[in-house]
Length: 116
Length: 110
Image (cartoon, rainbow over all chains, first blue to last red; front, side):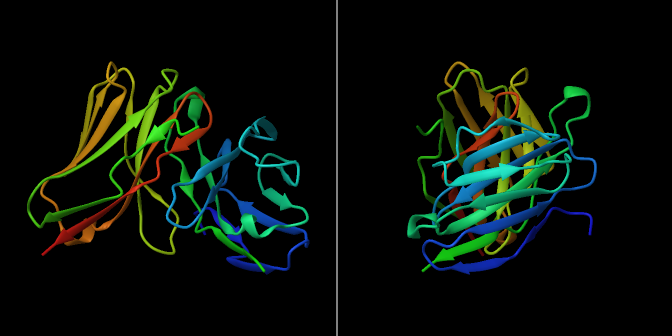
């Protein structure tokens, strides 16, 4: 499809388990964002990539969270030793940014992570 | 540190009337502002944006106003329609990442 694709849509993990969430951005989009959205809250910024470079990871809540985008396209958000407070919807978004001009970001449907 | 704030968690308006959603920000480095609309079980979808060099941007029934001195922006929907019922998020950007408000749930009653 032409949109941002995230997988899996739903993930149930036992506490202490490692998880990997995948994001396929729109082809050719330079910027990629990861957000964490708790129930009833707005998306909270986690990290931002411009091509393969991770320019901002200030939102990652702990060193258990790691994100990568090795070839400047697909990105993976990894959470190690999951805790119950990690339960949330994880949203990925991508934007084109032509010549530095800002463009809107397109979001995927998100991955709902439940840690039990 | 909530850099983008939407202080009204919910808003209810009658069909055909104006909906006004408000957003405040604290970071003076923000130079691009966006509104997103979100339905349940879907990711946010882009609605309208405004650059800091403008104070108004209009797209059909949707108009965004920016008051830089007050660090305030608002989204006006005129006329409101039942299909506009959704959660609306304000977002702001300072050259890279986007920061979101907590959202306002708009209900448009027929």
